[in-house]
Image (cartoon, rainbow over all chains, first blue to last red; front, side):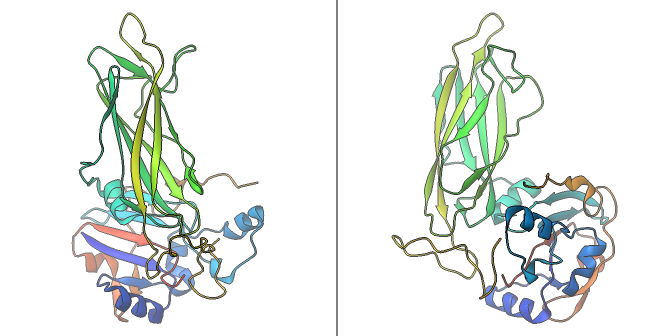
Length: 263
Length: 53
């Protein structure tokens, strides 16, 4: 597979970045964002979004693409797209490999927890997070034969399958996705997007994941139940930076260079 | 109020269609023709905000 990366940076910036980080794949320089504009990838609403959130205009925030990836097949056709809304957001390296290429590191450390007829485990697509990286939590349920649990469309009186994450400062939890269907049997996997938006220095965490469900067989239902999973995650520094020392007050959201803002 | 989310199916190159021809200089100054450079391989094209900030 070939890899290309496109940004509006000048040749000089890309040359220095590639040298500093040992990058040997093409970093393409689209100064003025003309190619990204022709591709229809420019986020024309950054200024509008900034105004909506009360963020001061920033000259760097013009002609920015939606961040993301396009996957091409051997013939050069687009087989997959994965883009984010905010220019701050992006996958982790291992997350990109997992979400786009479907190569998932074996979740060996995901210890299963059993409650009644349901066994569950959970794992993240990266062992580390950095500021505004998007991670994906996978929750897998193994339901004993003869039983099922209900999805979001569970009828009144039944508890649908739901995942809750214990609060962590700056953690943004997206919407869980489960396979289509009203009820699940056997092994079912759901995913939940997570973004760590707190300033660097937030430290390592253990995600406290609560899975709510109600298991039923053809004749009757068990009482609603829940399982709690503990999923560890370590903080990693942004490329080219170091993390604030433990105990130091968290750094402000990191401008890379004087005058830059991160919002 | 936050703006409503975008539908990324309608943004950027369309699924199933050939990715447009792109010729841009790389970090060495060499002009790269993306389709020629991938030489029949599958490809991952990453769009990101900046290597500087």
